[in-house]
Figure 1 (cartoon, helix red, strand yellow):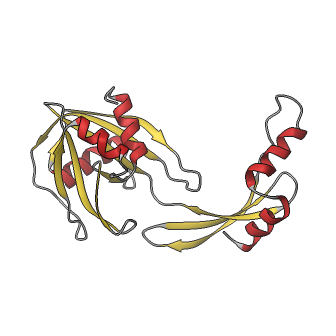
Figure 2: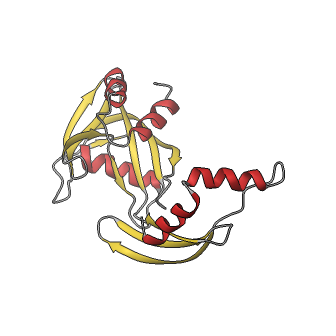
Figure 3: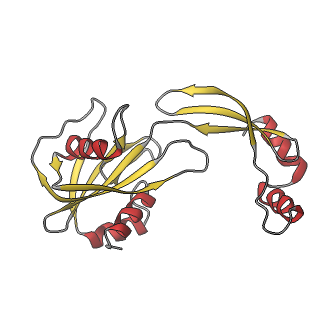
Length: 204
């Protein structure tokens, strides 16, 4: 958090209390007053992009927030003909170890989420889908990017992997029950995308 943000927090307690106080002053049924974006400036322009935004609160205070402004991404629940799931395993710097996840990645400029889902599935696993549908979108509280969940059916190995120079991806084929157990145990990244896709596929 920035100094401005801490200053705002200290003067009024935590954010949830401040929100409750504002809503109690409003007439019944009135929506809470909106924060007003004043300006923004880039802080970090790397693999992860971060922008600082300054907002004016309804009571006039000005606070600063750091917001991730990276590219949109897609994750694919890839189901084979016999209803098994294609997963990938690779090193992730956040947990600092190899972890499993749904195939997926960043949506390139000019791509639709559906096109990116087909491409990422093929590149990371060598599998292609008979049919693929983007079924859900997720947002994050401190980020501008969207995360799309896709469900692919009839997935078959048709190509060699086409990995980026820094990728070292192992493909795993698992049962749906094993996927559910792994995500409940906290063993996969982006578990919310797994749940969204499983729910749409009626596999929860």
